Amino acid sequence: MKKIAVVLGSKNDLPTMMSCVETLQKFGVPYEVRILSAHRTPNQALAFARDARANGFGAIIAAAGMAAHLGGVLASSTTLPVIAVPLSGGINDGIDALYAAVQMPRGVPVACVAVGGAVNSALLAIQMLGIEDASLAEKLETEKKAMEETVLSFDEEVRKL
Image 1: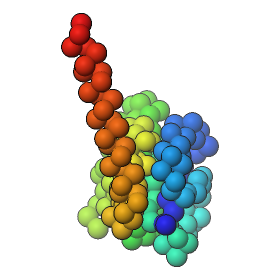
Image 2 (image 1 turned 60 degrees about the horizontal axis):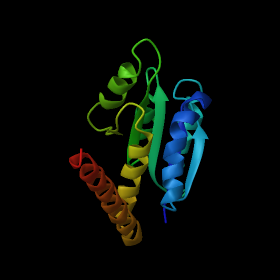
Image 3 (image 1 turned 135 degrees about the vertical axis):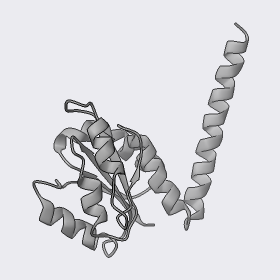
Image 4 (image 1 turned 180 degrees about the horizontal axis):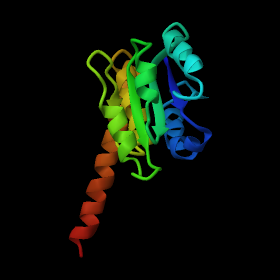
C-alpha cells in the first residue's frame, strides 16, 4: 500500500493535524509526518516532493497557515496529488491560507479542503488510494454507512420530541 505524506509548515500545525493522522491510523494507511516550510526550508520541501513517488508515497497532504504556499510548492515538484489544508491563524483567521491554497496557476493543481479540514484531507487521500486498493474502498464504504446510521439514529431521537 502506498504511504501518505502529511507535511506541516510548522510544528504549531501539529495539534490541528493530529485528527488527520488518527484518521489514517484508523484506516490502516501508512504515513509519514514531516515539518517542511515553503519559506524557511524550500530546498528540502522541493526535494521531498520530487522524491515522494520513488519513496512510496501515493499522495501528499500539505497543512499550512498564513500565506499557505506549502501545497503549491510541493505540487510544483511532483506528479502526485497534493491536498492542501489551510489552517486558521493570522489576521484573517485562515481565509488568507484558503486563498493561497486554491488560487493555483494552471498546470499546478492542488486539491483543497476546508480551513482546518484535517479529517477530510485524510479521507480524500484515502479515497485516492482506494481507486487502486479495494480493501481501502471497502473500509470507506463501511465508514459512510456508519455515518448514515448515526445521523438516522439522531433523526429518530429528535422525531420523538
